Length: 255
Image 1: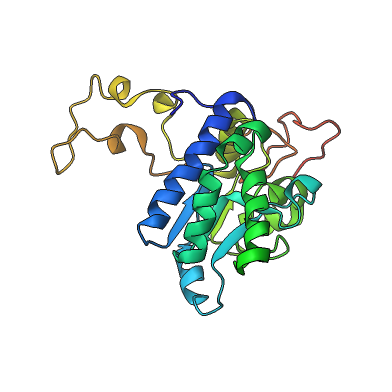
Image 2 (image 1 turned 90 degrees about the vertical axis):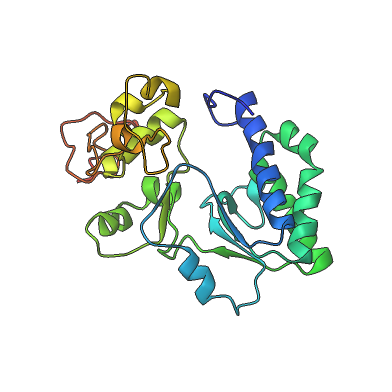
């Protein structure tokens, strides 16, 4: 496992992490458990398990967030591999075993998402695998497509007019921008002193212990209220950021 994060989408560290994403799902799936897989750039506003439990009789083996992109690379499903739900059954176990054997394709394409969609498309045709991609036109599972292209929808989210289950900060160039966007959205609850530090570094001078006697990161790192910071006027924000610069050329103020 890489010890450092990827610098940009698709670099060598990113590709290694994509293989790890395949393995962790395959192991849990083979043990017979239904599961949610999600990237770390996701916040829960409601428990998404409720959605999948309420749709347990729909007959689908897998549910995916809509990526939003309609490029040939992700055709025909446009499924986002950063958030999905899997029911453990013979069809999904075969799929993820096949995906595990496709590690060479993941390294070559630099994309877990592209290879997973290709394998799913094969298994839909050959083995009647049933996959539902939750439409980007619905408001239950928004992501980067909505953040960057659906200004009115994001205003409705911020003003509590719609109530999605989760939000995925996809479609973002790197983790630095993801952090800034979350801070601007009021969804960042991490003390700045803990960012980019190891547990040993954070707790070097701390004496807080949890109930089990183990060193805890909760007190030094977790905030009760989010740190809201304006970075870019042309991106969705919890508060108006009209005096901040644009990130996109020619971008207009969100508020």
